[in-house]
Amino acid sequence: MKVFHSTRSTEQTVTSKQAIRQGIAPDGGLFVTDQLASIQVAPACLAGQTYRQTAARILGLLLDDYTADELDRSIRAAYGEQWSTPAITPLTQVGDDYVLELFNGPTSAFKDVALQILPRLMSQALPQGDDDQRIMILTATSGDTGKAALSGFADTPGTGITVFYPEGKVSQVQRLQMVTQAGSNVRVCAVRGNFDDAQSAVKTIFADRELASTLANGAGTALSSANSINVGRLVPQVVYYFHAYGSLLDQGAIKAGDPVEFFVPTGNFGDILAGYYAKMMGLPVERLTVASDRNKVLSDFLTSGVYDRNRPFYTTTSPSMDILISSNLERMLYYMSDGDTKLIASLMEDLATTGRYQVPSGLLRRIQSLFACGWADEDEVSAAIHDCWQDHNYLMDPHTACGYHVMNRGHRRDGIPRILLSTANPYKFPRVVGQSLGLATQGSDFACMDVLSDATHTQAPSNLRNLETAKVRFTDCIDIAEMPAYVRRAAMEMNS
Ligand SMILES: *Cc1c(COP(=O)(O)O)cnc(C)c1O
Image (cartoon, rainbow, N blue to C red; front, side, top):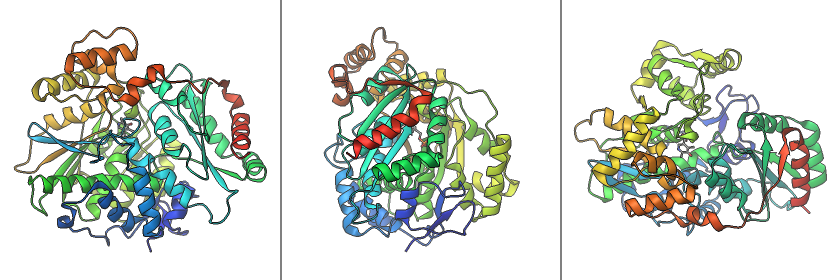
């Protein structure tokens, strides 16, 4: 059985269920397993597989204290009719390269891949036979994660979810996506403040022992988070790297064992870390390229070995990559340093106290032998959206466009297919995409969708277009100070 421990110490070990239930290790580190490299998936067996079959194979190897039946039920529920294509993550040829679309789920963004299955995995990690025990997920969101988490947890047995978003600081579409969410176990609430205020308040609530015992005794509820450091979010993302390889085999573009490379728009290092896991498990990955937006803390790190969050923060057209602390990078550093928990603990201590750390030069060279990087400013993003449409009739969103820009700056290595991960449907960002194509983008986000649709003869996904007339369920708006009381009330109501 796979055992997991913290990136910062090996003292305590847990199973995958416990790791998913706990989210973060008690010492603040992230759960990792040292048995990754002992799993080797033969490339030839990836051909002719459906997404679900590949998911069953990969999840079965990594989450091996779940029964095959538990995983099978989770996979069926997570990757079913709520996706707009049975391929789940289709691979499309664009020019001489490939785009792996991760946005065909119910909220039209890549977070669905993980957040459709995490709730099922979490629900099965609850103590068996105790129907009064439930988990309430608590999330502060700047936009995308909130909706994907709501959609995943809605009506999942044994769970509830409360999402806080900063009033007036998310887009019209993002707000409507959240406040129209169906489900008896969901709550959505605006807070007066910015995202950081809301996020800090959520952290304070998690650390509040008195509230925790009130919730445990009064409502049988334990609080948990669904953020991207959870093993249950990371592992499902490993699947699409293997599935993309299988698609290339099926299309006859490669033979089993041939190398491929991936370009990944990333901020928190979650999406690309999953590719590194796939490589450790035997996928022939030649190179992984990080694509950043103007908040290029990751690109700077991969270039210089210095991670420094003491820098201006930019609000860009790719909001989901506007991040200065890349939590999941810690896992890559763990593996690349051959599991040097002392080093990781001291680097993370440096980050906490000074906002900065530097890795030894040998480690940097090792990282650079696999990871490349690049970044795009907003003008380059806009030009990339424009050029890709003009050259290939393929419409992409601003996050994906960062990757497209970086990919086209580099040279293609002879015969090695390049795969760009596409993380959002372009209609999630209709104004920016429309402007990039030179269209008139006045009025609401919905007017922009229609303009974009008319000009490109493409269609907005109905889950986005229909938001204009969807029924609003949640109108609460509170002060930051009222958040703990709101959480207590939500927990009581949900378990009554
Ligand atoms: C979350 C997100 C990303 C970045 O994901 P990481 O976990 O930071 O790798 C990129 N694009 C979109 C649209 C996202 O929602």
